[in-house]
Image (cartoon, rainbow, N blue to C red; front, side, top):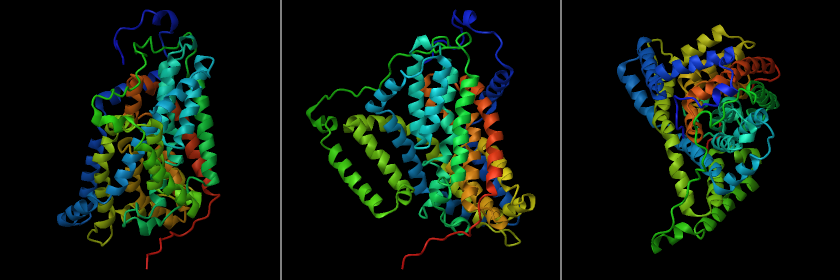
Length: 489
């Protein structure tokens, strides 16, 4: 919690240079502009709906056809929406559990100086995000806060906060919780209109490609190095105290039992049999399927973390309290994903006067502009730019996938690599878009402008490295036609 946002600490003038580096000044000006003029993400999805509807009308579609597609697609993503909500909730529940909180405190004893502490937070964030983006965000945020309590480090609290956010801006979409990779691996999650274009693409063809590993490793190393290079030294560091942020322990305490009827809520008697049943099902899943196939199912993935959260919190009361704190984080997903479904339906289902869909026209344009050699650069840059306006990996994929993957088919670009082009580029705008910073900012007691001066530097360096690697590695893969699931019976 910030106690004074306008009056600097008396220590600041004694320990800091008055003029920050040029790149930091530019980033702070950009952030200040965004804070004044950048609307809520819902505004962008609403504008996209209007733009797509107008484009369909302009190519000769009837208003009735556009409205019917809008309504048909609006509720088409309910299962996927709930799956994405559960990704956020289960990650938060696990990361905020008492055992993990104790692990954070022990981990905070490792660094020996402020710059090393910032790099350490960056490493934890980007590695944890490969497992679960929400765990990365919460765990790294709590770690940064615990490190800030060690006053002898003189760690720059802003730089540490930015480092805690790097998982969302660098590697999350290259890991197991990648929305696009998860959706493409599950035939039940792929919209019917998209399935013929992409087919089912397993993890072995996306996040587990060796080429994906190269990009991920490069992002991990680059993130840590840039975090270390840009972290102010002891003489210029602004600590949490300098920023007027309270660092009192703020663990969420579970209220004491008040009446006899609540005793089961404060006992593990209900937790243990439910966890046993769940892990029994998971054991069967992994015993009857290849591990890569089993973990690629979003339902399996979410159940695994839900059970882990129940076990780590031990009692229903503690578990439910954590869920209650996590739910507000998912409001954007709940409201915006139905609109993404409607957009995808208009793109793929409405035909103009020439009998072609918007997807056909957009993919044709992309094929005319791109070649097999330039596809990765074009799609990567386009996905990064669009990410400023639609800050949702899964939702934006549903908008892009119909025409991007149609173009990939036409140009014979590896479909799994096309997903990874999207994944690597999609994360970039998160570094300077405050949408996903909100949960972290709440933990740290900071504002977006405190972090973007550091994440902007990461954005510049990551953009160059990501686009070059996506382009260079594309030539090492061979195109395969879409693989459609077999129909039962």
